Image 1 (cartoon, one colour):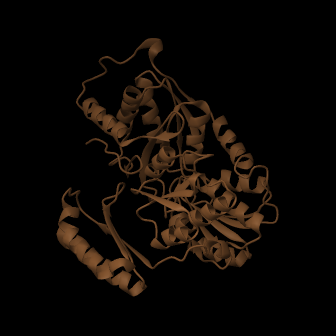
Image 2 (cartoon, helix red, strand yellow; image 1 turned 135 degrees about the vertical axis):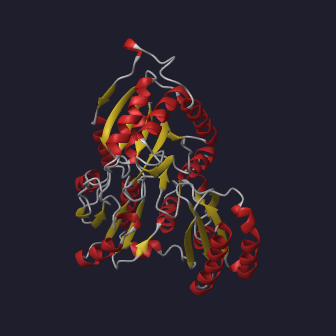
Image 3 (cartoon, rainbow, N blue to C red; image 1 turned 90 degrees about the vertical axis):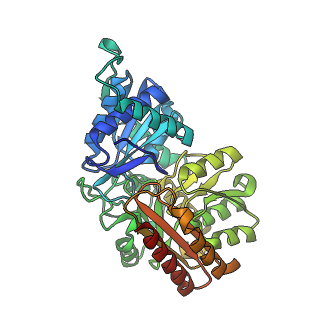
Length: 445
C-alpha cells in the first residue's frame, strides 16, 4: 500500500491507512523530490499527530534534511512560517474529519501548495521507495538530518494576525462567540481576538487528542448557534480542526457560510477599490445565488475545480486578491497563501465594525438558491462510475433547465460520491438529489 494525494494532501485512518511507515516514506520522498535542507512541521491536536510527525520528521532526516517541530499550530500558521522563513513545510492534520483520521499536506517554500504534477512525482517516488531494500545510498554520519522543536514561528503568526489584516484598526465593542473545534485554533484564536479588543466567549477549546471536531466546529455549528443567541453576541465563528476554514453565525443564530462570507468581503473590497481586477475566484460548488449577486454588482467570477489549492492557483495566475470555497476556505491572497479561518473571521468582524452593519444585513448581499448536498459512500474507487452516471445527470439537468444546477463528483479525501443540486425550490432540489443518490448507490453497488 502507498499514498495517493487527494484535493488536500493525503488522508486516511491513522495507523491503519495512514501508517508511520507510509509517513516516513513520504518524508523521504519529500526530501528527494522537492528538496530543501530544512523543513517545518506543524500539527493539530489529534492523538495520532505526534506519532505521524515523528515518522515524517524521521523520513526527512533520513535523507539529510533537518526537521523543525512547530507543535500544535493552524495550517495557515505553518504556511505563514513557510513564507517568512522560505522553507518547505508540512501539516499533520485531517482538517474537519473525525479524530481517528489524520493527514499530511505539504507546502513548498513560500507557502505554496503542490501542483498536480508535483504530487504525481512524489507518488512515483513513494512507489520506488516501497520497493527499495534497506538503507542503501542514504546519508550517514554528519550528513544525517536532525529533528528539533521551535515554537517561535507560531508566536510570529499570532503577531501577524493581530497587526497585519486590520491595518491597525481594532475590534473594541464587538462581541463574538468562537467554536475552536477542540482543534489547532484553541489557544491562538481567543488570544488574537482579545488582543484586538473584542469581547470573546469560547466554546470547544479543550483538546484532549480525541475530541477534535466531535459535535463541534464548522461541521457541527449547533452549539455555536445557541451560544450566540444566549450571549447576545454580534456574531459567531466556527473553525475546523486545523483552522483553515470558518463558518459564521449572525446575531439571530443563522448560519453564514463560505459563499456568503466571500460575497460580503468581495463587495466590501470592491467598494473600497481593493478587489484586484474586480474579480473573485470560487469553485464549482459555489451557490448560483453567489454568481447572480456578483453579476449585479459588476464583479467578475472565475470558477475552478473543488480544492482551495486550485483557487489559489487561479488567484496567482490572474493576479486577483480574493477567492474561496463554500466550505469556509477563504483566501486573501495579499496577506496569506492558503485559507485561514481566524484571518477570515477578523476580516468579517472588521467589516461589521467599520460599517456598523449587522452580519445578517451584510450577508444579505446574496440570496442563496436552495441547495441540497448528498454524500454517498462507495466501497471502492471506480474510475468509470461518473461516466456511467452521466445519463442520470443529464436527465436531472434537463428537469431543472436554466433554473437550477447539478454537480456530481468523487471526493478527493474520502470514499464518497458528492451530489449537489440547486433549484428554485427546496422540494425540487431534494427530489432530484434523491434520484441521483439512488442512481449512485445502484451503479456503485
